[in-house]
Length: 430
Ligand SMILES: [Mn+2]
Image (tube, rainbow, N blue to C red):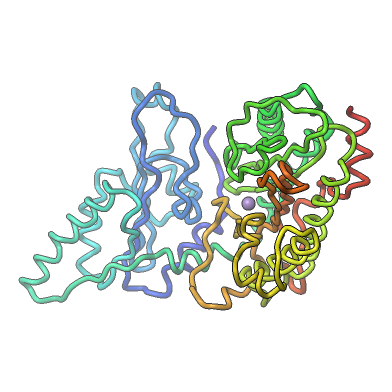
């Protein structure tokens, strides 16, 4: 089904991006079509999507002198029998608010002509070898001519720095979609809590989750579902999902939904039976306390780096108290030994990409959070050493959080997190 209207915000984003350099020539390639039969739904190239919402493959956006032009395939009855209806340049121009739209074949000539009065080309090298070769060849032809007529060289600039800054702070349209992505995934996670029991399997969890989000309107999962029961939960990127759920174990489910171009990213951990064991409860409660503590610290001005530091400190305290690490708090943090139990980051930006762009400055303090940033908060503890009283326990709790004026709003607040509530709900299933 083709779109008939698209929010004018995409045209506004193109303006905002390019007004910093009116003499620049900006080029963005859409996702390229691959070979093969009915390859399935895949997301559009993220920056291309952010600047247009145009869904077709092999399209190109060129922005020059305040004018945005879309290059796309013309209508073709025979080809559309195979791949479905196309917009074609005329319709695409109107619906997607471009100043002009041309057949894809005319890109090279238009690019060369625009190069004549440009000093800088904004283009991301290294994403696709075919696109690189095409642009570099066109540039070479143009540079040789410029040398002869002595009009100077053209600089190549990576547009991602500026785009990352823009994409880090979500606008109203994006926040609306992220709320929906969070809501749909949270409901699917809660559905698992109400359904899965001993005798079900990790693949049942994946199937139920994916089924729930698709029925609720998601395009696809935002990444491969991690359904990790028992000791499998101590492997961070476990995706085999081929074990049966056993009474007495915990199961860790890390799964998200991709909805209207935006990702959600949620982890919940719950007992397969009706109750946590005493040791499971100890670990779960510690992770939940740290998670709530970190969420309470999220506000403008704080950096993800400082949240990470705080998480490490809190977990190091628990690990010393439980006898898993020896030494003073500072020694344990300094030596990095805590990484055996908490090896990953507590947070990342979330948006079109699951690990969204946004970290543009490599300063020691990190980039301060601003109103409109969306990030995950996902502390976890994993015990793989046979000598530990917690051996085989892996717990991660992950919410999606929007930074507000004075604090933050949890977009995934529909999830059941407290031990008592979880046990109450789980005991009714088992
Ligand atoms: Mn995550």
